[in-house]
Length: 435
Figure 1 (spheres, rainbow, N blue to C red):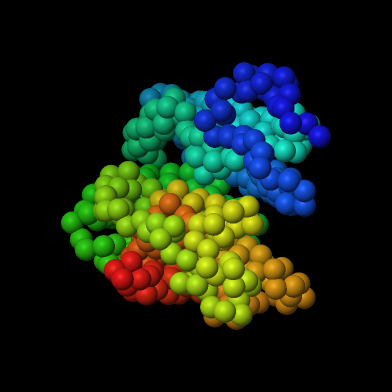
Figure 2 (tube, rainbow, N blue to C red):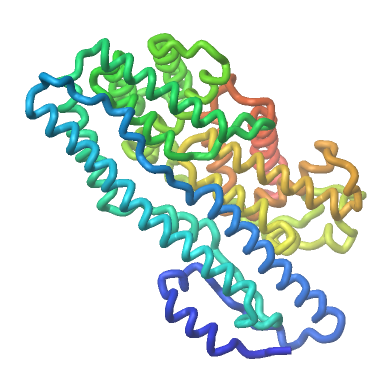
């Protein structure tokens, strides 16, 4: 049984220095012996396997890129001005440049994920060492946008706006409708049937292009919304956005509920992205709402007869829920906080609820059962929430900005659960702190 890190591990660190800030390796406690040692070694192995699974999922779902569809940019007429022809070709050039830069970045990120997976499945880290990976920070690093891409996006929009003056409004609207319908059809194939959700993808960029095309009949309405939202109360942000969407749906003739649902999600992503960039404190005020899980014991959130033993009920929440067993749901909520729109954030919380439920069912040896009673699930969810960076701020964000209607049943249930958790944390748990 190896008790030292191999030379190959240090070679890996040297060759992947950019990933070092996200990875920690802890040595085995010297005081642990016998059966307890075997249990810890088993946990270390399960921990590595979970990281491999999560990195593989991230690679397949988030690091996805499609070639640009240049047919969604209307070609100039045969007798168009030379300037229009030049602008069209320049727009095509910029889009390919953006794609090539993104492709290079994605390939590098895929290689990084693959390298970490290879390290975790190799013998370079002995079984007596625990690996801790800061996945939320790693994901942000791997998904970061190259500054060159950001610069090219601005150049593209400036050029596209000038080019739009050479295209007739009726022709432009007809073309935009076709782009929109193609985009919505693409998203239909990505939808999770249970939650009616689809992950962010290239369709978001196409939708933004539709919103920001000056010849669009709703262009000025959208710009006005982005320029004035911060003067309105927070509880009016989403209703105002839904009012804009009603006009958008009418102009673009969205005649099916599926198209309406997809377009609404795309609009939420675009609007919140531009709004957050303009005024982040409108959505997340700089107020520290964090609650320290070390100040609560498990009996504060879970009752007797739950999956916890009497000994576990006396332990601090951090010792039970900030462990390998609950690492996955904690990370889902941490990942939710990285999104700047409530739909994607709610879906990640929804995934955290699902994973927590599976964990508890396994611990209760109810593998044949698919659903826990809410009373049995609520306590563990509170434990998971307490062990995240700042669930209260995230919870208030989705409560303030998620649409009151328009949500799928799964996300509606998730929003109701978030409201219950926030109420519990701000009343019952806050009272315990005052005692």
